[in-house]
Amino acid sequence: MKRDTRLLHSGRCADDPRLVNPPVRRASTVLGESAQALYAPASGGHHYGRGGLSPNDELRAAIADLYGADHVALAPSGLASVVLALRAAIQGPGEALITDSVYKPVRRFCDEELPRLGVTPRYYDPRMGADIAGLITPATRLIALESPGSLTFEVQDIPAITAAAKAAGVPTVIDDTWSAGWLMNPLALGVDYAAQALTKYAGGHSDFLMGSVAASGEAANRLKSQETVNGLHVSPDDAFLCLRGLRTLPLRIERSGQAGLDLAVRLDAHPRVGRVLHPALPSSPDHALYARQFTAPAGCFAFTVAGASQAEGEAIAEACQLFAMGFSWGGFESLILPCDRQIIRTAVPWQADGALLRLSVGLEDVEDLWADLEAALGG
Ligand SMILES: *Cc1c(COP(=O)(O)O)cnc(C)c1O
Image 1 (tube, helix red, strand yellow):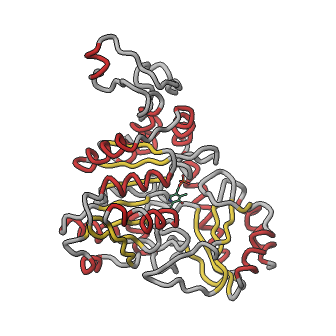
Image 2 (cartoon, rainbow, N blue to C red):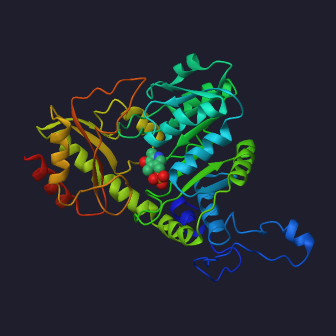
Image 3 (cartoon, rainbow, N blue to C red):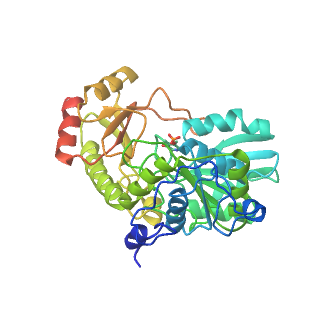
């Protein structure tokens, strides 16, 4: 079966094939018919509600199918899923190599919490490929990737980095929110733990937060154990919404990606625009790597307004009518985010040539979206 077909038929109702959608089962308590059944439920059964029942099981199964993974953990937010993956991967004190383009709240976890685990974060240039081998030492406990990176959209050479990591026996984690597991499969490229904020494209409707981590083999066992000891729980109502969103993920992400690329091309030719940070643009320094690793673009990218101050960039975002300002992305509605207040880079300084604005292109008509941007840019 083709991937599109599989996505519609995976994660179906586990105990009643007549139901197209699994029932929402709200339960903390699950009764046992015998002490034996209470302590050791039959395979696939549950003895308590923390790990979720239905449709959490079906959602895990659908995401596992998407990644070809042995196990999928669900977490109450995308941030919690990346943190879960980092905790599962890190096996002892030492150093962690973290991409400099990492999502800012994850960077904060690395700076504040990794040292408490005896792990020192070291940030590396996201455009570093096989050369990462030169940064790996006997103390390296983890390599964390995010591709493309948050706000600046650098594409990483995942096969080169995972090859170097494997040669040194170092586990790898990726934040795969941009591809949503649909435009790329990081596990097939050698990554051990693939996290994503389901909040964004998988959910697609801006009405809940959730995250997932997919892993296979030994990494899957570590993931299961971390999931259990951390007591993470996801509401079955949210799992239902997520599974529903997942059914239309390909339609939405591909449509949003096409419209985004269309707008990126037009912005690239606009006199007020400095750089367009979109890896699918043929002029992007990341284009060749992007073309090797992704099947299509997602609809989230950024651009600079040449020579504009932070205040001027923010005024442009405020002048947009259809593009509303908000921190999230991947929903049906288009968003614009002025980024200058939150960009942090320590390995490779951010080369600001003007205010940085990020777009999440939704499902509106692309001509309406372009008219909105053009009016706000004053062109
Ligand atoms: C939004 C986002 C997250 C966090 O997801 P939440 O559900 O908001 O916690 C993680 N990584 C990336 C790249 C994101 O954009």
